[in-house]
Length: 230
Picture (cartoon, rainbow, N blue to C red):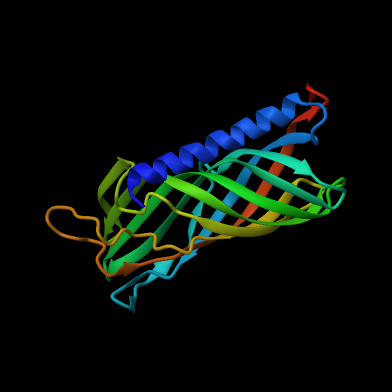
């Protein structure tokens, strides 16, 4: 799938999500929808980075920046519900290329999740599971030699990573509106075909990102019978 098709598919999916939410918010005969706003308070990601099958030394990466969004929720019963939305994510890898050279590479994602909730939805104690379709919108890298930063770069819609980065997730949420979530990206973090200065810096590079996060959310607005209440 080329870039134009990916962007078109993502834009269409986002528009459908927004249209469905708007429709249900204005039609009293439909099921009740409500929005929750939250995110990942502290995201710790792990990855096994390798080059040509040889493992490189890598360390966990922590971030609390730009991991937030809005979800649209509907409950089919007291125990089963569905949600989608628009969420931002900050994922990346940190690894040692050589004994004295370390790279920090990250990408900002904008995605649409789709998942189901199971549990006591009235009290807010439930498990959830789902998948997410993300677009990589900003890539950033930093190079360190002997602990000193020697270079950095920042590219919007850079080709260093795949543009489309799907993932699967599972977690739980408590009545205190906090919880724990795990998310896994099955595709390679690196675009092995990326070319810079007539070379392919990521040739043979492999990394799959997995993260665990303390998540939070709180009810922002509830749509009832065509009107809204806070």
